[in-house]
Image (cartoon, rainbow, N blue to C red; front, side, top):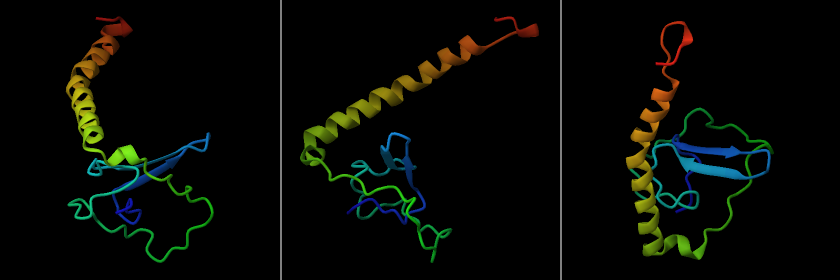
Amino acid sequence: MAMREECKNFQSRTYASGETARYCTLDLAPEAPWSCPSDCSGFQPRMADVAWIHGTLISPPSEEAPKTAALPETQSMLQEAEQIVSSSFPEAAQEVRQKKRRGLFGWRK
């Protein structure tokens, strides 16, 4: 199933370069930006834009999914990469917080 643009948790950003980022804010779409799970537990219909007519400022349709996106080895590689990033993030965030810590009168501690 394609990305559910009518879902409350779907977001799309178009940058000045024309590149479009499409994603699920709950990170429940493992094959984003090409498809959502058909039985997604996080699906909630978007109520804010019901019956609105969208103009031409809508982001362009996403490109076709590459054939390698659905391969099991690709999915496992992406999951491993996500685990690496998720496990190292708290440590990196703590390092940044310590570097930004300042004492009385703006002196670094």
